[in-house]
Length: 321
Image 1: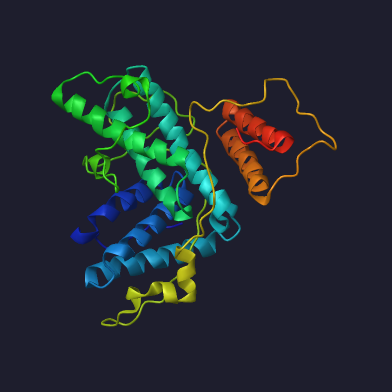
Image 2: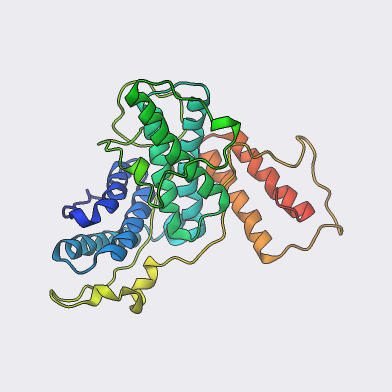
């Protein structure tokens, strides 16, 4: 897809600019992440300002981009399916989080670690386009933003950060990061991190890009009224607006400490004693399988096996690990 040219982001939509920058950095690495980031930016902008000429110009351009992207990637499941798109975006954020958390716990503190935590927090924000975040995803987002701010402030003051969670507990961290994550988002870096999907060790140089995954993204256009009208004030009343309001899909992503319930080498019993699963649990089992496939795209066998074992455990016992 050709380069995305959007009008300047007006001051009142400064909050949206962080996600548009994220999308720009991902355009070549993983277009699907760019798509969902711009969709999240559009949804956020519509709640802030849809009437001023500057805001309308940006909104119109975003809608055109989203509509064109969805048409050009109509055969990409990550664009046409919220479940597949959600799994991909969560996987990107999760990989970043795991890498930054590993560096932090190993006491390897530098700007790159701060930037990776920062970017993970932004991408976890983008996951809200799929509905309310699960406790696991929300906790990782909160922790990533808190860590980005904490390590940044320590480095700025010349202090040595404390590795890992304060007091050895993840709970209760990040209370000083507000709902929009301005503590981390407002740090003012011009470039987010650049770890590869495999997340190898990042050198101390100042990176200029972002990670990647596999590709794609969705959207339909919302008709814009002629100048002076107020059609943007009620976009939810148009059929096309439904494309910007994604259903709440129950989802979760395994946290770093998650461990499979099934012991290695143990195959669950099969036969008539298998439990009858509810539709929600069947959907969850399908998601574990999707996440396993996504992990294999990164050549991450450990995560793939963990998710497959979770799916097997759920199918054989009816219990979600």
